[in-house]
Image (cartoon, rainbow, N blue to C red; front, side, top):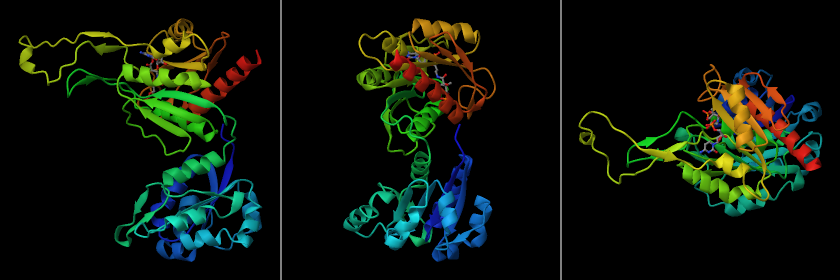
Length: 394
Ligand code: PMT
C-alpha cells in the first residue's frame, strides 16, 4: 500500500494554465496530499481560488513558504517555472531552505522553443548540486494558444518523477521484463485476429515497478492503454505472438523477474495473403481460416535450461479458475501464477479494476480483493519480491 505522502507544488508563469490542473488532480488520485505555492505571475493568470479549489488546501503566495511546510513535505515539485525562477531556486538561500524537505526537490524549467538556449539549459541543469533533480524538456512542447508554446517536461513526466521520488526504492537494481496487451495475427493487409486486452494491467505492473526503482522492459502488442513517460520504462513494441516470443527470448536471460501479463494469441493464421481477400471467394457465404499454434512464451521460459528469472504468469480464466490456474502453474513451470476470472464484473479485460488470486509454487494461495489494477500490481510485485528473496536465500 502507498503510504501517505505530501508534496509542495510550486508553479510560476503561464504553465499554471497547462500543467497545474492535471498535476494536482493526478497527484490527488494517487493519494498524495499537497500544498500549492503560486508566484505573482501564475496568480495573475488563474486567480487565487483556482488552486485552492483544486487542491483543497489554502493557496501559498510564493515566496512565503514556511519552514514548517517545507519540513512537512516529502518532496518539492517546481513545475513548471520560468528559467529566471529556476535560477533563483538554486541560489544559496533557497538551497538552505531545501534542506528542511524530507525528500528531493524537482524543478521543471520552461523555455521558449524559438530560443536557441541549449547552452543555458545545460548550465542550468548543473546547478543546485545534489539538492536539485532537474526535469528538462525532452522533445516536449506545450501549446498555450495565443500565448505561443513552451518547451517543458509534460505533466505526465512530472507526475512519474514525483511518484518515483516519493516511493520506497525496494526494486532498485532489479531488471524486470513485463509482457502486456494483445497480440495481433494478420492474415491479409487489412484483417487480423486479436483479443480484448488493452494493456492496462501490464502497464500498471510496469509503472508500479518503475516507481519502486526497477529497470523495466515492457514488451507489448498494439495497446490502447498508454505507457507513461518514465525513464525507467523501456518499451519494446511488437505485433504478433511470434514477434513477442522473439523479443522476450532475446532479453529474458538478463532479467531478475519476468511477469507475463500479455494476452498472447494461442493460434495464428497458417497463410498470409499479400492482397486483400475478396469476399466473392466465399460462394456459400462461409469463410474459414486455418490456424496453427503459436509458441508459448511462458512455457518456453519455464522450461529453458540455464539461468532464468523469477517467473510470474497470468491466467485469464472463465471457469474452474483454481483448477486451471494450478495446472498452468505446474505445466508451465512458473514460480507464481496470477489468475483472474475474466467473466466477473470489474475483473480482467478492459476495466480499471481486477480481482486476482495468486498461486505460489509452495502451494500457498493469496486471494486479493477486487481493487484498481495499480493496487493489484503493487501486491503482485510485493509477493514476487518476497518469493525472489526466498529463492535467493535457499
Ligand atoms: O490488458 P487488460 O485489458 O488490462 O487485461 C488484463 C488481462 C486480462 C489481459 C490480464 O490480467 C491477463 O489475464 N493476462 C493473461 C491473459 C492470457 O493470455 O491468459 P492465458 O491463460 O491464455 O495464458 C496464460 C499465460 O501464458 C499468460 O501469462 C500468457 O501471457 C502466457 N502465454 C499464453 C500464450 C502464449 N502463446 N504465450 C504465453 O506466454
